[in-house]
Length: 235
Image (cartoon, rainbow, N blue to C red):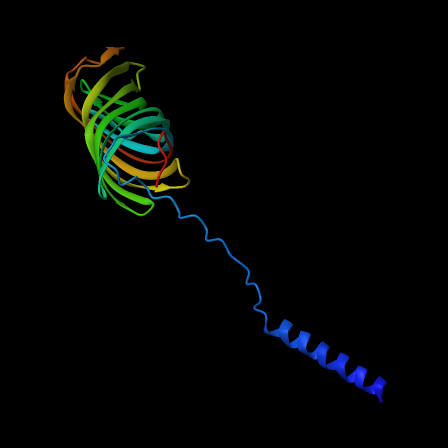
């Protein structure tokens, strides 16, 4: 009997410990929230400087006595400054692009039919930017001044030549989207239209082609992508 009583007591104590263990609260796994994604600009009122690179393509139309349509690749560097008030972004940007744009053309110079080509070697721009920031993305417009260098080379069936080249100044308009990729790096895609106006040129000629002055109008379209490195972090 004494032995049976001891076994009953041990069973009762074991059951009590088991119930207490079941009643104890279990620890839950703690999951750390991911850090917030960076926004395109800090919502603070001080300037933010950046440097970057771009690559794209362009096409031009040189309209005159002998016309041509150069096209090809452009690429280069940009630098800019942004200043934000709430979600409005104001800034300025300058770009310098090497160009591999060339294309054929034809026309009549000094009464002689000619065929040949035209090309652009570089473009440069200085523009103001205005944009609206939404989270990590900036939607912007830009406008300012543009410069380019062009060259035309033509030849007649009889072997005469006509060439002219020069640097033109014009105006630029454009728009694009810039998106924060990390805390200090953003990517962009944009379109630019550059109009270099109409000016009178007189080509240098040989082989019986008359050196006749005529108006030459130049305009250019460019689409490019780029990366910018900021020197202050995004939010």
